[in-house]
Each structure stands twice: as structure tokens, then as C-alpha cells.
Amino acid sequence: ERSYTLTLLPGDGIGPEVVAVAKDVLSLTASLEGIKFHFKEMPIGGSALDATGVPLPDETLDTAKGSDAVLLGAIGGYKWDKNEKHLKPETGLLQLRAGLCVYANLRPAVVLPQLVHASTLKKEVAEEVDLMVVRELTGGIYFGKPRGFGTNDNNEDIGFNTEVYSASEIDRIARVGFEVARKRNGKLCSVDKANVLEASMLWRKRVTMLASEYPDVELSHMYVDNAAMQLIRDPKQFDTIVTNNIFGDILSDEASMLTGSIGMLPSASIGESGPGLFEPIHGSAPDIAGQDKANPLATVLSAAMLLKYGLGEESAAKRIETAVIETLNRGFRTGDIFSSGMVFIYQLFSFIFFYLILQFSCCYL
Ligand code: NAD
Ligand code: IPM
Ligand code: MN
Image (tube, rainbow, N blue to C red; front, top):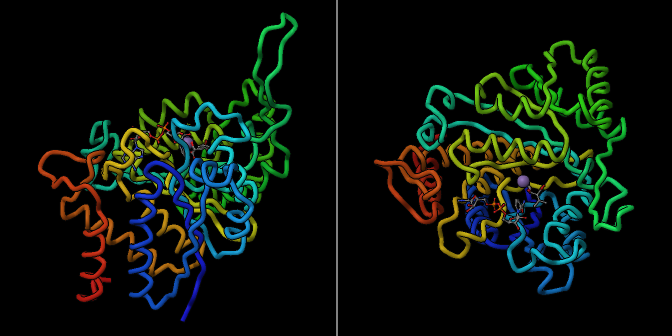
């Protein structure tokens, strides 16, 4: 029997709600696939701050490092918004990503035919969109130094950050971009701001240099402002997008609205070795936390990515993806993806259970 240790990091807000659903789905999938999971639940973010005084306790990082994969809900909330930088929930998440060295963040945005009407875009624009944002996750302006607060020559308060990328940091994420594009449609669009920023100029130079090693991949470059516009104008022109940390953050939230809701978008963060980190791209949604309204599918699909990219358990991943589709086919919707004629539900988990079992008993797969 294949056996894995999974670290669960529920976090704050809707994080615990959506991770609870994903855990149930993982448990059931495991029993259907003959896999054994040992779950270790650890604190991170605001709840870790309240319990231990830091947003990423050493035991949490150690447990994550010692496991086969990590599933995170979300962190953050009003209560901690005014905390100093090192005592912010968000800092805990950045420390986790850096600590696990997961520099490549894969964020797929797929418009499912069942949800075309949930998109705020016209059907012709949104339908059949299937793109992947490859976001650099452990560098750029999020981590660059110098950073901080100070005063300028006029004795005015200033806050400052540095966008910095080394050639090797660019090369390794660009390679992931080329590899991902190669397995998809063979089209890679590198998004930067090379008309203004030095870090982007180096980015474009290195990506262009590497292209000769991937002759089967068609490389293009786009400035980020244009990319933001093109994603709404004609999203089908994109297959794989590779970009830096902050542009990837923003463009993936934008891409999520093609699919109907940010509550649908999963992600996988991987490094050279060690466990991967899997999390929905959305945050802790404090505006709906505790109301049983959160869409758990981004986290459930992140669990599927965990099985596929983190553990190589492709058939288990497929089972979850199919169950999600089947659940949507039956018309079940949380509020964020609700449209007329559908069945409103608070939490999807019982239905996902139902369809997982259904598939098992009638050999659906
Ligand atoms: P958010 O993603 O939490 O919410 C944005 C909007 O989307 C809200 O209206 C929310 O209700 C909705 N939404 C998000 N997830 C949803 C889901 N699963 N189902 C239904 N609706 C959903 O972004 P925000 O409001 O800008 O940030 C809130 C907090 O989350 C902040 O503290 C922020 O720092 C943090 N955050 C954390 C992560 C993370 O943990 N990876 C990501 C983004 C933001
Ligand atoms: C995300 C979030 C995080 C980020 C924050 C909460 C640190 O927005 O996962 O997309 O900016 O990476
Ligand atoms: Mn984000």
C-alpha cells in the first residue's frame, strides 16, 4: 500500500472550511485508490500568530519539510492587517514558500463549459479558455532587498522595495515555462515590463537565450499592461504564460474571472526537490468566512494537483477532477458561480462524496 504524509495548513478565514472539504475528498479518494494518507495539521498565518506569536512556527515549517506534500487553505484577516511586517500572516506564507524553495507556481485557468455563464465575459470570449500561468514565487519584489521604511531628503516618510532577479532565478523558472508549454500547446508567452524595468530587461534576455534549447516551443514576449488587457480582450490567444512573482499574482487573479470565480482556481508550487505546496489562489475571504458560503473547489482541485504533481498519483487526481465536473454537471453551485436554473448549495462536499462513490460503484472511470 502506498502511504504518504500530508501536511494540512488550514490557516485563517475560509481556509479551515475549504481544507476540511479537501481533506474529506482526499480521504475518500485514498480509500478508493488503495492509498494511505497520514494527515498532520499545523498552524500558519493569523491563527498561528494568536497561538504562538509568529506567523510560521518552526514546527510548522519542519513538519511541512518532512512530509510528502503540503496543502494550504488561506491566511490573513482584518485582525492582523495593522501588524508589523514580520508579524503579518502574509509573511508566514512567504516564509513557507521560501522555506520549501518552491519557486515555480503553476496556476491553471480553465473555463469549464458548465461555468461559461458564470463568467462576467461574453460566452464567445470566455468559452474554451485553457491557460496556465507559471508564476515565479520565491524572488522578485516580494523578497528583494533593500526594502523597508525610512525618510527621504525632505524628511518625508518613505516605503521602498526592490525588484531583483538573478540570471539563475530567471533561467530556472523560464525552463519550467518552456517544459510546461511543451507538454501543452507549445506556445509560451513571457510577460514582463522590459520597456521600463532593468529586472525585466534581464528577464527577457535570459528567456530569449533559453529559447534555442526549446525549438519546439513558440516563444513570444508581451508587456504586462498589454497582457492584462489581452487577457480580457482575447484570452484564447494564450496557452502558457511565464512571468515574475508580482505580475503572476495579479494576472492569475485576473485570469480567474474568465473561469467564473476566484473560488475555482487551484495552484501547485514546486521546487527542485522536496515537498510541493498546493493552495487555492484565493485568500481568506473574511467577508464570507464562517457563513458556509466559500467555494471549496479551488482547494479540492489543489488537492488534485497535489496528487498529480506532488505524488505522481495521476489516477487519483483524475478521479477528483472528474468528481468536480460531475458535481457541476448536476447543477450544484456555490453562490460565487451561481446562475439561474442551478441548484444553490452551501458546501459541495457531500455531493463530491456522492459522485466519487458513484463513479466507484459503477466503474465510471
Ligand atoms: P480574497 O481572495 O480573500 O477575496 C477576494 C473576493 O473573492 C472576496 O469577495 C471573497 O469573498 C471572494 N472569494 C475568495 N475566495 C472565495 C471562495 N473560495 N469562494 C467564494 N468567494 C471567494 O482576497 P482579499 O479580500 O483581497 O484578501 C483577504 C485576505 O486574504 C487578506 O488578508 C489577504 O492578504 C489574504 N490573502 C491570502 C492569500 C493566501 O493565503 N494565499 C491569497 C490572497 C489574499
Ligand atoms: C497569493 C496571495 C499572496 C501573494 C499573499 C497573501 C502573500 O495574494 O497567494 O496569490 O501575493 O502571493
Ligand atoms: Mn494573490
